[in-house]
Length: 231
Image (cartoon, rainbow, N blue to C red):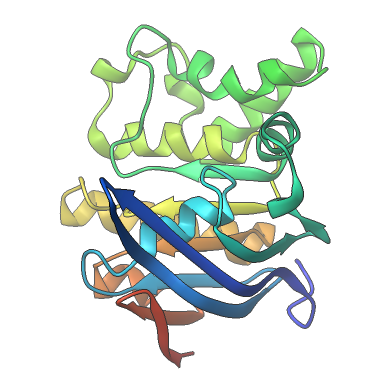
């Protein structure tokens, strides 16, 4: 397990806006907070409140206008694109609403993709992939293509892909948004297990109160500002 008293993420005075023609649209305004190591954080708020933008900034997908984001002691806002891509490949696992699996690749091959950016040998990659697929309960589906899997199974493959590099943080954007209630419950139980048993720090955007109930802490965003915290 991680150390809950030590922040793995430190966000200070973070702001982000987008341009639409000559118009500047503020999305996040002067956000500051910490995320402890081993935390399971849910970000909630109305559409357009800045939740996904904040998630993308934390994951190193997008760049802030100003402010700092320290993750594991590294201020990722100071990294250039090449360094940021390398950092992201090793430190962030992504779980998307629509799985983002490549249809012409098997479950094994989809999970292996992030490892192709590492220096692991073929055997080491195989060991990592098999372990990740066992963790999500799909050891018997390695050779299946996404079209041969249910929505819940596809999301499990996506979670295996997210954890196969043993990243510092997992970021999840509406991970149950495309699933039926039963499958959503299974995925939430799996994410909860990754947090409790493997000590993974998880940051999840969700509109679903049932999903948020799994989190240790819920933070609300409204019009780009952090509101009350519910732990």
